[in-house]
Image 1 (spheres, rainbow, N blue to C red):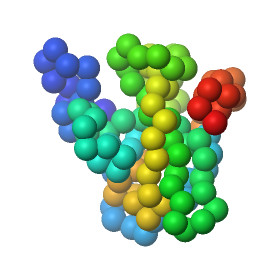
Image 2: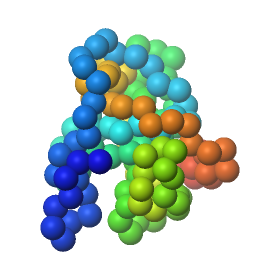
Image 3: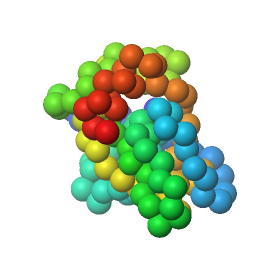
Image 4: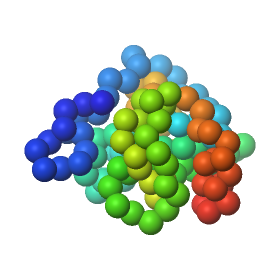
Length: 127
């Protein structure tokens, strides 16, 4: 997905996202590529895969996601999954949140649904 830098394990460029559009609500358990500026100014990657843990009912709420890294980190291990476009093994490792109004096509791209067995472990650990 994006260009790899020499000696660094993350992309220099974010994968292409959809054209601008209005905010929308994701489904829990779905995996998205998320531009990291939505939840952090210090994450070195421009975008990172994440699974949606919780979608708030209130407009003022924040969408909770668990980001995935291909580096070494504590969390829930996840094998490479071609069906999600994740070609490296990784770990669901960090619980972060995103404003509902920022969840829009130009900032996120849906990859698919996380398999049930991994979803249960992620939900138990971070939910």
